[in-house]
Image (cartoon, rainbow, N blue to C red; front, side, top):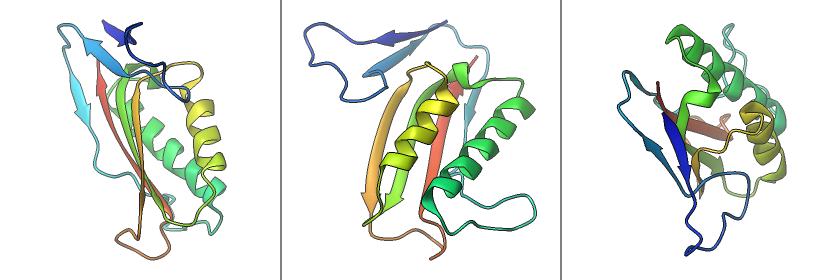
Amino acid sequence: MNTPINPASVAPPVANYSHAMLSVAPGRLLHTSGVVPTTSDGRVPTDLGEQALVVWSNITNMLEAAGMTVSDIVSITTYVVQGQDLADVMAARDRAMAGHKPASTLLVVPALARPEWLMEIAVVAAA
């Protein structure tokens, strides 16, 4: 149902994502808000790599609650605060995606809504 679109006439993606995803006759769509690195007990790790793991855990839990998995994700938008090393963010995404390559955009921003948040991610999933 969700098919990666990476035409040969366009330069290949620069990381593990697809240029576009085609969803044919999806029965359900899930749009998240920006998912932040706050644990269920209200803790926010100070390390960006740990924050990325918390965000992906939160996303996975939301998908599960909707009867979906990461393979249903068609689009990821990641926001990271300026000055952070993006390697841990990319590694966490790649680990969470387990080979699935949805469309993905990463933006470096000056700040997020709370100073302790170094990143947040919004996803769209179709099943």
